[in-house]
Image (cartoon, rainbow, N blue to C red; front, side, top):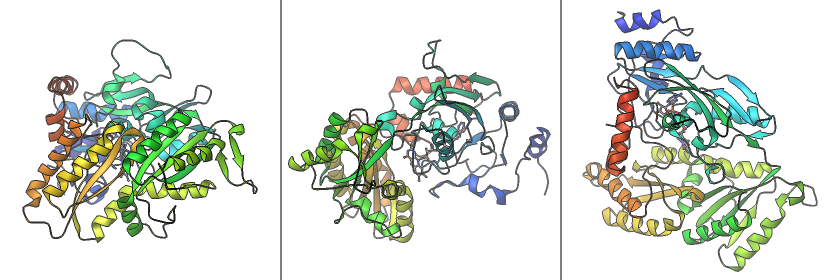
Length: 485
Ligand SMILES: Cc1cc2nc3c(=O)[nH]c(=O)nc-3n(C[C@H](O)[C@H](O)[C@H](O)COP(=O)(O)OP(=O)(O)OC[C@H]3O[C@@H](n4cnc5c(N)ncnc54)[C@H](O)[C@@H]3O)c2cc1C
């Protein structure tokens, strides 16, 4: 095979891992997790340290080569997939996975951006500490990808998004300069907050190479309970009751309605249902406890429940907010329930592959919690008028007002649907907008929602984003085709 100039130049960078030019080895880097986006790359590079990232970007900047930074490639909106030109290079951060510093006393850890999220959990939990970012892709996604998408997940209600969990950042700018903003400080008012420009930028402004993260005390215990609330308005009332009793101890509050369970049952082997009947509007809740006095074991010393939970549930039964409930007796039960929730995206993907459902319009929206019931009614009304055959599968982080609101069609959809499906999404976002929500809660913009960003973002803010992009990356080499036009 003839070598191109790019091949030859990249070899002269003398990276420890030679660039991968062979297209057969590119598969996992150029296709996205959902199988929706397929690109091509000139090469995949796997730098081992910040200096190597810097020399790659210096080279790319000088030679106008497009660069796609990539972590675990679990983006749900095509953010890490290169375009089809085959001219981009992918910088995979997977070989940059060292812990640079673990300060147990200060409860911080500084890690390189290619460290897989679940590995961070393991490292800190061994020391009785806790990094709260948790999501279904945690066994594959990397902290650089989490920061670049400002990922959310199941613990945002108490701890915030990835942005709130980051104290400092090291970034390589598009021209190869290294900006070291790594810091353990909780307070640092020294001008503009540059760190936050790179968090959520989806690789369009530079490559994050390391981050200092906030850690927390591992709770003494987490009680997991599953509740049947029958309808959305009850689930919201339940949230308010729990907030009043456990103001800063609700770790997660997840909505798992009947449609969620139908898909889960079809696609998870040997699934154990938490309640006798399939829940209409199930809610999965984690409550943490930091004091031994708070916890009581059963006669076998096995059930470990926070004392007040049973009383609170009693109150909710009396007020008819809930009709059934179960408290997990041990960690295994809790893990098994959470594994069903965490497999949501995977189950949906399998459902799509094996059933005659043919189209899935994924929406990751957020709303003021108190508007969710009205939003859902309006949305269902609009969808059924649009095409009665459509089916909505929704679930999500109710405590944060964040729903995954996915619309499926079946094999008998009229031919013209493909062209009109964009209108359906736009109609849905109009309703989100009416209730002061956001069309993009936690997955980011990527390629999928570029149009919507241009349409819904405040004009002045959108222009400012473009100015920042053009100043930092005047040649437009960083992750082209993503986020902005
Ligand atoms: C099963 C499943 C469940 C999920 N659940 C959630 C959820 O609950 N909440 C949620 O928020 N998301 C969720 N996601 C989406 C996704 O996992 C997250 O957005 C995750 O944070 C992406 O991390 P990653 O390492 O895979 O990044 P990638 O997919 O590799 O990249 C994502 C974006 O970040 C950029 N990027 C990656 N690394 C860097 C870097 N070091 N420097 C600069 N830019 C970089 C890429 O260019 C791309 O734009 C889920 C995905 C799956 C598949």
